[in-house]
Amino acid sequence: MHRWLLPEAIEDVLPREAKKLEALRRSLLDAFRLRGYDLVIPPLLEYLDSLLIGSGSDLNLRTFKLVDQLSGRTLGIRADITPQVARMDAHLLNREGVTRLCYFGSVLHALPAGFTSTREPLQIGAEIYGHGGLEADLEIIRLLGESLALSGVQASRLDLGHVGVFKALADLGGIAGDLEQELLAVLQAKDVPGLKALVEDVAEPVYSALMALPGLYGGPEVLDRAQAVMPRDPRIQAALDDLRGLAAGLTGLPVSFDLADLRGYHYHSGIVFAAYCGQHPGAIALGGRYDEVGQAFGRGRPATGFSMDMREILRLLPVEKDAGAILAPLVGEGLDWAVAELRRAGEAVVPALPGHEGSWREAGCDRQLVKKDDLWVIVPLAE
Image 1 (tube, rainbow, N blue to C red):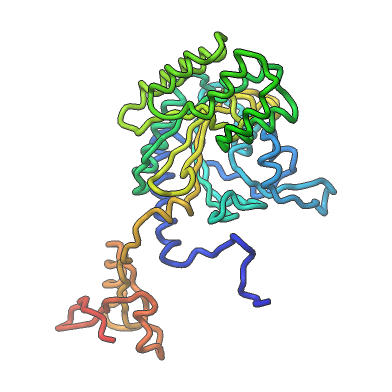
Image 2 (image 1 turned 90 degrees about the vertical axis):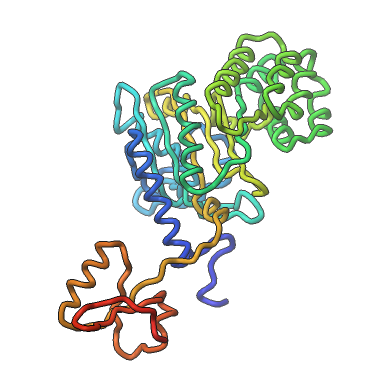
């Protein structure tokens, strides 16, 4: 086996892509800072029970596990940063009022999320803690829209859902345990025959409501259709009212609805959302409300947020020609001052180490600094 081969679905980031990724990271984190979001940097690994708080089996399956040689306890390499940020809010920061936090870092998945997905996403996200109203959800979703626009990506669809609808139906129908897990899987896949086989013994009106869920996606009319087929239950009514309130406050964004989107069902507690772009096969950003996660850390707080994988965002951007660097000689009168001025102006200046003539274009240089009439000037690279 060649030593330079990487594990499946793990990849390097080469200079051109790395430069663009870093520029995106800086612009997004700066935008978050200007909106009051404080940057936090959680560790790469933690005790497993902390990483999997309230997440259900899906995150457990994606998490790499190992034994800590110091404590003997099981550690996990994070597959999602959000539970770590919830721990920091609940246990370390311990603020009384609203807390806005943001983050960026690698996560590792035991299995890729899709056929073309990486197992090492570069996750960036923002979270609001301490406010349970729709105002926080609106702020987070608007921030997601602004973040995509700042990245140069145009969302073609922003699906809104609410896990409260299925939670209420499951409770009304006495659905729990393995049946609940199977229902989540077929609803997520919009597998209507599979759904019918699973709910054939569920009584009305829950049966009809569950059978309707896979088709409840699309524009604002979806909420009216849901109102007509759902049982009269205050929890379902509250969920539909929340979705109407969000839609009214998200003018200018391509809002749609999907009441069968139950990703992170065990993790989320209310509103969920996913952003899509053109022909990209999956969601380019995910988020929602997760009010119950902090309880495991001793302090339950309302919470909502979003995250996206910067590697996926980068794949959606057009390939652009890089601004080339300027090749400069090693020595010359007034050279240091000229180079310093160019670098202050944002130009990359590369010192010409001896013995490498003919290879500087490969190093990214397209111009060179030469002295003419006692002045340092920039001319096209002569090689």
